[in-house]
Image 1 (cartoon, rainbow, N blue to C red):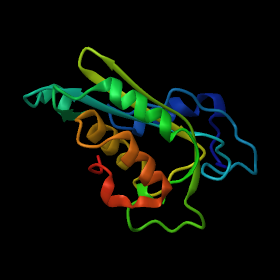
Image 2 (tube, rainbow, N blue to C red):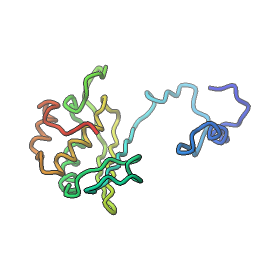
Image 3 (tube, helix red, strand yellow):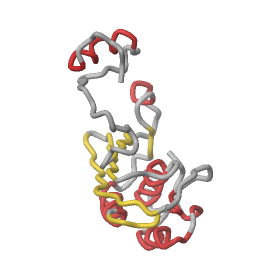
Length: 168
């Protein structure tokens, strides 16, 4: 809650005055008194952007991570389907998380490519520390042919973090 005299539906305009040029609020509204930004959320979505190139592209570097031109997006898409559903994602977490359970539900994982830009979107009921970054690194490792779907399934079965890819 706030003591502001600005109507809730216009609050985003005032907020934008203080935000940096590359970040903007697009909407604001009054939330219920019992609203909690973490505990009330039913779904969370992360989107990671990669680009395929043999050379770093300065205009993309700020917003995307470069991967090899030869990465196979079809393999990544097929592997992404395996991650969907309720699983114990302990092998997809970095040290440092403090949670009661490592079981999470992933509603969707999509891997889409357009003009050598790959967008990986992961939607779930919650995530462990660095979980999505590890998922992205693991999908890239699969796309590079350095890991197979069987190893991904082994990670989900509790095979350990060392099987997966780089934390992006």
